Image (cartoon, rainbow, N blue to C red; front, side, top):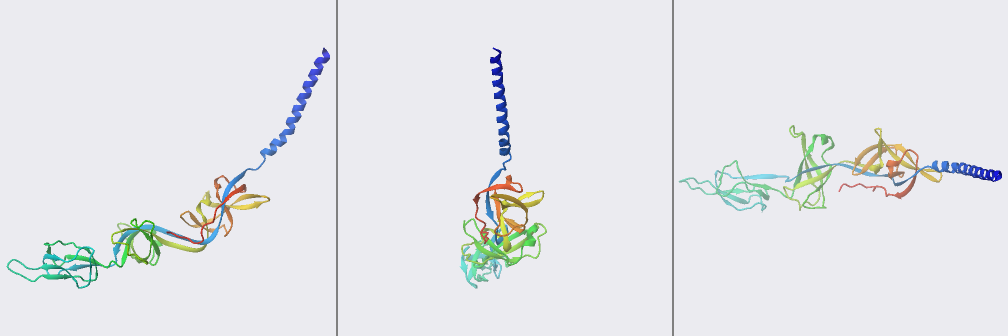
Length: 313
């Protein structure tokens, strides 16, 4: 009976020792698994050298470049109107008549003639109204030469000058744009509105456009060639500095190395890189928020670089 008990105790001790050995053998395997470096999935793109355009967006009203008033030569009643708003007239054409007669005195009607060739854009006087020589009977304009009159806020004044290009659009013509340029810049800033008046002239076909239309336009303030540019969301900021992650080879793997960059123009999701990046270098575009300097990465998607040429349409 004593031998049976000793046999059982010995068997139990053997099993316990075997378990301890098995656990101790598995520990290095677990530690090895824990030491394995995390790999992050990222999408990348490449830096490109090309054009980047900066602009400010403004609005204004379409007006004729030249507007002239037609006046009567005498005081009297407006007895006839030969034209309507929108009519085209030639210079010297009779557009109205004013009767200078008074009670007991009859005079020949005095004609009102068009001072220029153009369209009638307003008739402020009505038939039967009393006209004096300082009151216009009609307003005429040359509608073949229209312009956009706009106002630039004081903070943008330094960025505006004559000759700058612009792209104009109208709600009446969705999807269409009309090229223009700054033809006139006021020499002063209005003290009450703190804005400066500018005028734009159209460079292409503007026959569709009508006076009084509301225009929205993008005014080109910078047009840089041969600059390094990347999508702006590839840039991350830490402690007031801007960084990008470049893809580097590390043996058979890829890592993301962090580099500081100096940026220039940032607009429409594009960023100019002044230093810290070269043309053709591959950078992380998606998955950037999970990375540290030297993080191991797996490239799951390569996104096409920005176009070489830029556009604001």
